[in-house]
Length: 110
Length: 118
Image (cartoon, rainbow over all chains, first blue to last red; front, side):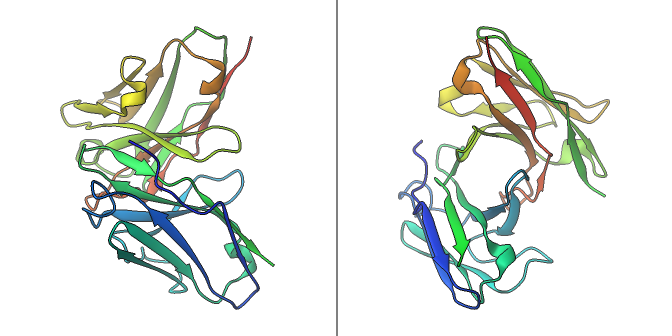
């Protein structure tokens, strides 16, 4: 199972929006709505910010939103804040009953 | 509250084995799958496999089949991952994570650093 493809980096100024793509295949992102997004700050464990493509866990700001089209899922961070600077990973359930993570995107707040 | 607390850092020689534990609390251990994910220094997250604490069924990523074993002890609410024939590139932080019913991982352990060094 190959990793999902994400851009290595993305950036924006405070208050701007940034969108990260996550491209998979018909056997994972394209087939299931079990796409999640995780935020990871240096030295910390990942934190769930989006599940089932577009749902936010309690406590996650509505500045974070998710979507999906075909084999590509996307995470948008609106109204960028300094604390949003982190690594972001997507993940998906697959038809082989295994999970796969994305390659990761480093978001920089300029 | 729900917690996953992992065992401490390990340093192993190439060819050795390591066993990392993940002690759970705050919920019914047998009600949720436990997954293992690793992250090499400066690299991304890599899914390794899962164990169903209710019965002990497992499923491993193809890359780790034959070298990894996931087990659990329901009497103490703890999951384990054992990796054998360690190589230098197995150096990583190993995380356990609880999978919720919607196929996602809202709860993670703090991570265990495993260093393979001669």
